[in-house]
Length: 223
Length: 179
Image (cartoon, rainbow over all chains, first blue to last red; front, side, top):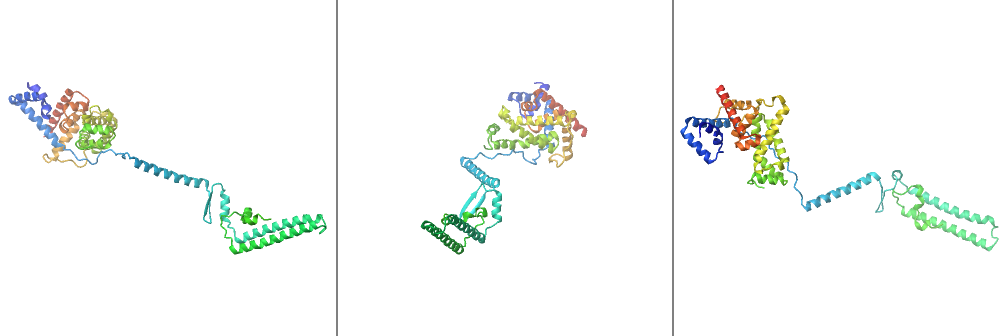
């Protein structure tokens, strides 16, 4: 090895990259050449000088990447899906309520939901509560109407034939009179029932247009 | 994954989708890489940005790493390429010019050397042309061997050696002028 070769291999020698054979060659040359020995020492000195001139600094922050959430097991997956389904059901119900605005009635413990009632209808019932006096009026009107219909029916029969011209007519008149009497008794009993029980009316009852529904069934079937 | 796992094992785990394994690689390399970029740019904020970008690109292109034992060299190569393209983008005409000295903030102090000498040598390093500075930093400060440097800087070992000698000569001359 000559001085030129030695100089060329100085960096590898200092950084420890040489093969053992090459290192041995350099060492044997180094022992016999003071210039090359000096060159090697200067190189080492330069390396030390540079390294100590700029020591490593600590980091001001880290550069870690964000870790995504772990893959969940089947239980966590089921829990997640159940939660999502519940949220979807609640959202759906709320949307139905907002979009269709159904009429909801609570009448004597019975809940009824009507999706097809108009908003004006529900607004009307809410705005006009039905009083007991109104119901009494409707009952009276209905009974009067029923009595007048029965009376007119009797009048239709009566003028066509003379009064008590025959036994059949007399019987017929007597039947009509009995029916009128029965109606009057019914009216009286209904009045008593209305007065006794008070007929507590909910605000959800329908207005005057449907007033005939207020009759109890056993009375509405009667003439 | 464990701390005693080799870089190669951690790279394989990261390729399987374990970001934690990659973060362990980051933990091993970040101080090394940050200080290299700091000495290369002379600017802490710039070095941090480049470091962050390097790790992000490294993660995104990890499957392109052929020799998984050479993760560090590969990462430094990404960093050098980012630094070079950044220089070209910021000042195309001055891409080969020395770095402007902008070491603001607290300077890490070496007890064995006066502060003035330290700053003078740093200034000389920053005044070197980028291709000389890269070689000096990789060889003297970060202990890379010539075959690794050839991979990082993408040039033959003979070129690297001549650059190294040239850089050392320039530094020596600069120091003599200051003395």
